[in-house]
Length: 228
Picture (tube, rainbow, N blue to C red):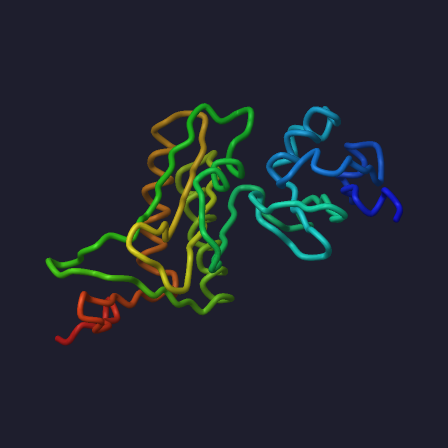
């Protein structure tokens, strides 16, 4: 069996190819084990590409992945710049998989950011004085993602030079699970705090993501649709 099948193959596209000055490279098996580790490796190997790595999109075996995606033996990773008209200021994601603050912080961090503010929303065991055993989140994914992007872009316009990344989880969540993570970066802390606070408040206000609470007896209740 060829040793190449055990390597990671990294392909660079468009501006990423020009900055790296190569179309493709390979890495030894297990030399990096996640996209975040790959970014650190590429920053070291390709100094011209390094300042732009947080703006790149990554696909593993022809599937777009998040920054915390794991890499395995024989994987092929495509490194791609944003498409024309795409935004580097914001990222909005809705998914069923677990969340981490590291992921959103990595997206908004850059050399000009002197402050990064974060928010993590966690499922608690009570609401309105009643016990909560679990939550179900449901979304109209296309509309919800578009609305999150609109909300975050509007905050960037309002606050100024900030970057914002937000990920909301859907599906069945237990008490203690992370439901939403937000990070905002700016040159100064006031703008970072402001953008982060506005982002979570407006996501909760306008994005079509619905929450169903289950009490200790297993009775469900859609939040926001309580009897008048």
